[in-house]
Length: 316
Length: 235
Image (tube, rainbow over all chains, first blue to last red; front, side, top):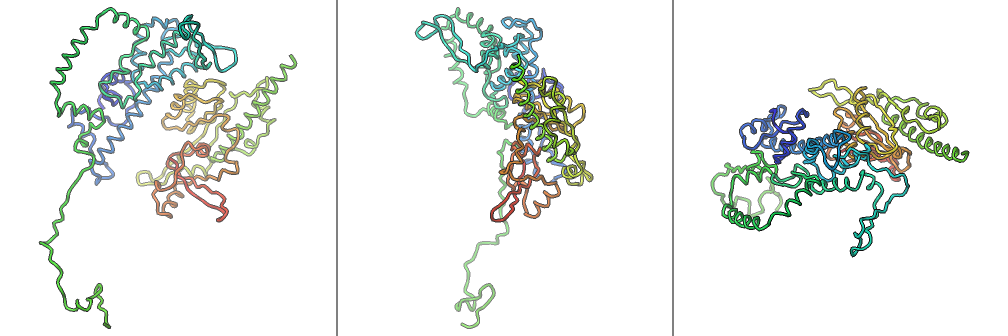
């Protein structure tokens, strides 16, 4: 296994970068699949026969290995996510950090660590931080709220004028444990802003060009960006997009080897043994047939019924 | 003041009794799995337990409640795989078990599990059993089960309040040794995948600490045949 090869087997380039950067000395699992650009080295590595079963079909061995590697990759990802959760519980690095203006290193670490997460993993992180007594938002060092009063539900009131029809106040009934996950409502908003950006699919099923869950924005960054965006016009963007579309259509073709290789990679069919299909069909002609078949002829004794498997009935 | 005192003592008493029942089930479990435990330990009466494991206020002190037990000869024989060409003299795949009660009343997460894992690893226990009062977080479960080369199990105290295998509707489960398993498969001309199955997460399988690939014999009463034995492959 070469040193620079990433831990995760996924088609996401950023995942490769993130995992290679942070989990360098992770345990070497199964032998890794080489990138599909180098089919020569790959077939040597994978299609080797089993030492104790030399008569096994190398193609079957290769396919079995391919699936085993996929499962191993999933397991690796799960351990990676677990490690990330354990890391993120300890964030932020300084106990006086301000969740509204986190230090750039912490923010970067937080965002890059969250890339492989699904919302469910993020919920696990929130739970873990709550058990540690911290606010659920990963960049907030404060302890979460503690309410002494009994009762499983709390009533929260919105700002003035937030009620139905713009009058009165908005009222919500919230479970106590949901409320106790955060230090303040702002942190709850920040944490949920991150959660909705995470991709629903697990990492090993994501598409290579899927932008969801890739570049996460903190709430503050998102607000700043939407403020900027309002000033600029939208005319230009529509004009460029229509010409882009025309170009794209002109470039379309039915058979594109590059794209089909990408597709194969996304589907996890990168192994050369799978290019020709999963089942090898080997038609074997029967060469023992001797000339054209002839019709049966009458033999002596056949008029009385003939023999039954060599036995001729006597009294007839 | 006086009133307050009595309510706490009643409270403590109740918790102590509950924990005593869990404690007894743990020992019965160790006995059923085949570890070396003495009769007195299994049959420990409530007042002795109270003396031994309560703090000055009468509440249980879970920090004191740690058990380790060694497997008996019979259990070692049961867990020794069949000798093969590559491994002519196999070692039994079982060893000292360690049981710990987690003292934290709420919120057991990865922190406690990591300490537990570390302790199991450091003292070279083969199996660890972690008993908590509340459910543990999903990441903690994953962390507990991901110990390389060791087996860590988790139970909640309330799961062990009653010994489920002593219930009249639960048939007797007996683990087969690799030798017995091989003979069973030969007798019925089966592959192991052709046996009926039982999940590792099945309550009785968890109680007996079964592992994937083992076979249990289930003996139940039958109205017509007197006794009826069936076999389950653990998956």
